[in-house]
Length: 94
Image (cartoon, rainbow, N blue to C red; front, side, top):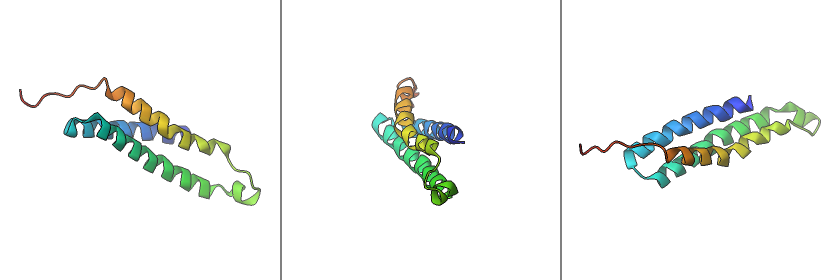
């Protein structure tokens, strides 16, 4: 389940990065927006999953794989920044 959420976050943030980069033509603002999207999406998924884990509440130990959601935030942002370098933006003055 966590891998699917990470993949969805990557796809959504890459689409958002592409749209922001086409409009502003500034890489730093689109990378910052990707970081913001990943923090909001994966942070919310982490919070919801953490509160729904009843084993953590009853026994004191929970699902340790939930931390993958937080570890994926900088990795996905780095992948977005890396893939942004290969994106071409058409010049509108043609």
